[in-house]
Image (cartoon, rainbow, N blue to C red):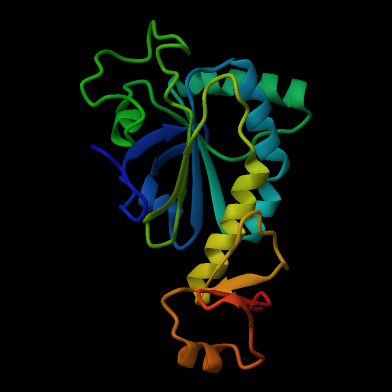
Length: 219
């Protein structure tokens, strides 16, 4: 099954380091970040899990829950989390899914649906495509997907930046330009006519081209 932006995020039940969950119920009326790992005790993922633990409060401020996934048993996750706390200086408090039957990885198109077997005997290399980030809205729709190679650590500051953009543009009829950061100017959405824009943005806008209408970030 192929997944695209604005598809409903597949629901599932799973065991986690914080107990069993049903995914949609766990999300509730929050946003969510699901990020996956090919194997426990892998070096790049160790740094990623630690960094996400360090900045979890930033996601909480944005009404966003974090959940990790790795294709290994939950008992192994618990041992790995101890290593992460020791080496990264931060305790992981968000849940980590144990995906030993590969069900969630297949459901989210990170492994082929016909992939045989379980986590037993598999290596990080055989699971290398399980390196995706999914941002999911309160409507349970997929808002963003990113997949990284195993040797390249993910940039979770970029996920925060993108989350700020998605949350703002969900409320206001604007888009964000390249490399936009919180507080910078934005662009009036192309779906907004000039007549509508005059009502929405009475202070006016700069327009170097008719289709490029720049305004202050809505508050």
